[in-house]
Image (spheres, rainbow, N blue to C red):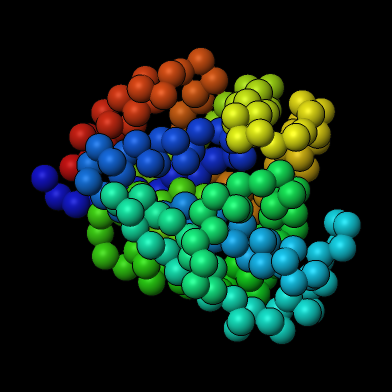
Length: 225
């Protein structure tokens, strides 16, 4: 059975990371969460006062990009993120980071830096990578591409429940506002917007369990390999 690369794209809280992780573990592939890398830059920006309210000090951030060292460490084939020597895999999942990550990820210079690193990481086969521009930019030649979606209400519910489990103090309304804002930014940003490529397989998992979604994706995988 040949080894391939798998690209998984989709909206915020659509379940793309859940599917990508499950595929990687099932197939023995390595999983890269590219969104976590943008969250790392966002966390760095927050910690270094490069964001005030909703305003990103773009020029200052660009000038300090060389000081942002992001490493991807694989633990049981799943990626963990190291920012300037510190494991921040859990720190980047806060609501504060979520509120600003879309504004950071639309900056051309940030995307150029991270896309280049993502392509270097996955230059060999055997990777499952998720994000918003994987099939279109990072891995345009991936042998298998998925575009994952779910209804807006379902995505909001999932994200709200996730934050509650982590004891994040937020409200359903704030989560709704955050996801709607991120959708607009992701779809309409000038650099590498979120798109569904013509060669991707569309999965709406609104009414699917995690296991059902994985089983469906594996059927398409077996057709390819």
